[in-house]
Length: 276
Image (tube, rainbow, N blue to C red; front, side, top):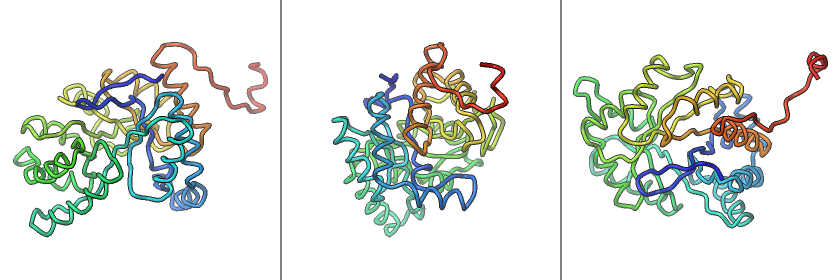
């Protein structure tokens, strides 16, 4: 079964299944987004999660109250008899007034009702609180308290490498962080080596996203970089579009962690005939 780590007292798989490639956020083109939305249904979600669950990859990142996700998770759990652990990244209002907090409570109640285990305000929320002058996220504390009070572990989903640094320095009640991390530097705000150092210095385990740079890196290249440079308590979140991709990502990851040749079938073209 796939190696695990802990977010506080919650055991999660170190490899997480992302939802961008299930919901239609390709970071490639509008046409690709449309293709995903028109072809991925609850049955496809269930097929992918069935493969993951059987390999011990039981954690899904990016949970939201969307029909095909909810139905697909339920079907995969029924097929395997195993539970999917869900991590949510809802967008929450940043106003801080009574009306904004009331709306945040309504949204968080919805996610708590879905059985979400870890709730991390989305980058659009979190990064609005990052203040480089005060080196803090002052004002986000009430949102984290609302998450904790609903039995979910609070975290911070961010695109800014400063966020874990400021959260640690100010003692924010957070159990984990998100960081974009890949060998291509795709969507990263500073150099890869700086983010690498920040991850290793972080007080809490870090969930790294976009390891394949949204398809710009081959799986072997992107995953080799991630698994070789992260701590044993950190996680890698990968989006896949088919059960075959899920099988490949899981086997490549296990092979890299176990330092053995991966048992995957290579793609074949006529130009490689002389190598066989």
